[in-house]
Amino acid sequence: MKNLKENRSGNSRGAVVISSSYTALAIVRSLGRNGIPVWILDDKSTPTGLSRYVKKSFPLNVENETEQVELLIEIAKKYNLHGWALFPDGDKGASVIARHYGALAEYYQLTTPPWDVLKWAVDKQLTYQLSAEIGVDFPKVFYPKNRADVLELDGKFPMILKPTHHQGNDAFSNSRAWQANDRTELLSLYDEMCGLTDPSVILIQEMIFSGAGTQFSYGALCKDGKVIADVFAERIRLTPLVFGSSSYVESIERPEIETPSKKFLEKINYTGIVEIEFMLDKRDGLYKMLDVNARAWGWIAMCTYAGVDFPYLMWKLVQGESVTAVRARPGVRWMRSVDDLKTSIQAMRNGSLSFGNYLASLRGVKHQMYVWDDVRPALSDFFQFINRIFRKLGKMLLGGSAF
Image (cartoon, rainbow, N blue to C red):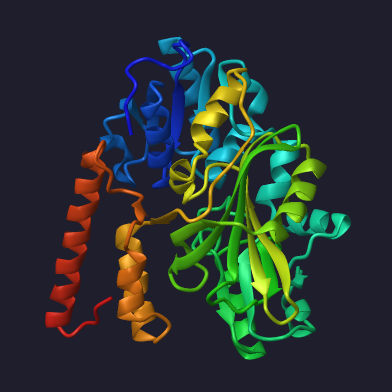
């Protein structure tokens, strides 16, 4: 992609990106390629800070959200960033901005909605409550208050335990889901989770069996609940294999998930970028809502190749520029190379993926890290991968297990 030396709009305003995951790299590249200056708050967990499109970086070494907000305001004041866009790259960052919306909006153009809107996305109990009200399907779910409630649950196994939100810092709050195959295992996991977190954030859900053709997403840019740009996608491979994040995704056509997505977004009067995850339950043929990610999502880089550059469109929207309605074209495939290799090896071992099909999936695929116009993050990612390989080999030689 061509790197424009001047902002296309002629506006000198840039963007500050909270960088705590690989998603931040996609935001940085999108904006940087469009000539928008990008600064980041970097926690060093990803190689985003190595991108050629990062003009300035600040360490994200604060203790709590109050200090993070103070840091953002201090940067805006010191460097005169009034009107710059502020992008989070995960739920925690989005929640911090939403809870301090008024204070931050004095300095930044916010890409995150205020808390009274965001809460319907980040709190799964509220997400499913609203879904029930507007007739959007979702898996059967329980909210036990104590162990006695778990004993009395009337549901089909396997079940999964998951956090109602990802605001905590414990192992459970930072996980996607834990699987229980019977009641004994469910009670054991519940007891373990209660030792890690407040029982009020534990959600128990009937498990929908994953597999080929079951994982889908609807991504959109909205203003006041109305969709301006959108994309349909199939999340073909996840890392880890079950309850993982997307490592191989293809843009598709899937109109079945458009109506429920738009109903939800219109109901909360949503403004911003959002990904809504669905699973096809092959037992009843229904597409059931799983999660609402009210910020940039892991495979957002794929959308640019498919004709919808969501971070740049979001930047234009908050700067008051016009955004033309657009839908992503189907047939674009994208992968997180290293993570997808790992999950593909696991899939080949359990027989759910053949080596030939894996090789075929590599043809014409776009990569998260490996792009010619921004090689330093790719080199860092590659050497980290080599380092992990040598550590695994060392464990093998010492009698441990690999992969």
